[in-house]
Amino acid sequence: MKKIILFIGCGLFCFLQLNAQDVACQPDQAFADSTQVVSPLPLDPSTGMGGIEAFPACIGEPYELIFTFRIGDSTSINGFGVDLLRAEIATTGGIEGLPEGVNYFCNPPDCIFPDTTLGCIILTGTPTANNTAGVSPLIITATVVVDGLGSITETIPGRIFTGEYNLVLNEAGGCESVSTNDYLAQNISLGNIPNPVVAQTMIEVSSDISGDFQFNVFDVAGKRLHAEQIQLTTGYNSFNYDASELESGMYIYSVSNGTGAISEKMIVNRR
Image 1 (cartoon, rainbow, N blue to C red):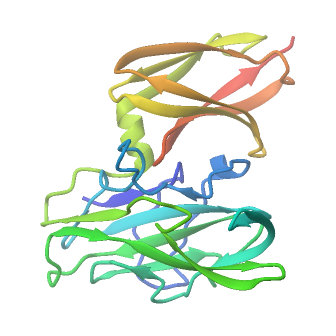
Image 2 (tube, rainbow, N blue to C red):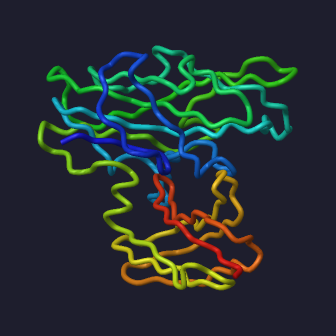
């Protein structure tokens, strides 16, 4: 069974041949106006949030894993704000811990991510029989270019993005996960009443998983208009959203955690 891992919320892709001109990924537009730089975030061992352990690869089976990156226009180094020009990784050898048979490609193809843009990296391939099942830490080495300071090498995870990316490699037939979004879709359902909305609407969430999540509302251009932290418990959850300041039209709302997002459409009708 094919595995596709998408961050936080890329669309589904068919398995492609390992050729740079054929392999592509689309960054998750839900992060266009977010402060989160990489999705999914590394695993935080203290909270259990983030990470990629829930989405294993299997020997002899096609696999894909997509990271979304949001590159801002500035960053902080040693407590000082600096102008960020771009971030980049090598087109080969920039990710440690990949199983034999799995490679990576970027969007943009040169793996250079200019400031104020969204980009993505796709890991894709079929782990060969030469691999041994187990857990392999993934480490992405990036070069951050800042105005006036030149190039600085950082790793993800590392001093800025602490935590762990542990890629689980199972024997053939040992994979059940599909995608980050599919995983959430299998465990969370969203709806809002009423829809269309005049002013107030109730967001209803039925969840088979619990934890801290973020509720976002975006316009159709991908601009985030609202964000708040929510906590889901197993079973039925609901909370109110005030849409009275939105113009008539279509909006997207989502519930996300450190690894993925699930979204639905909301129509605002001022009549």
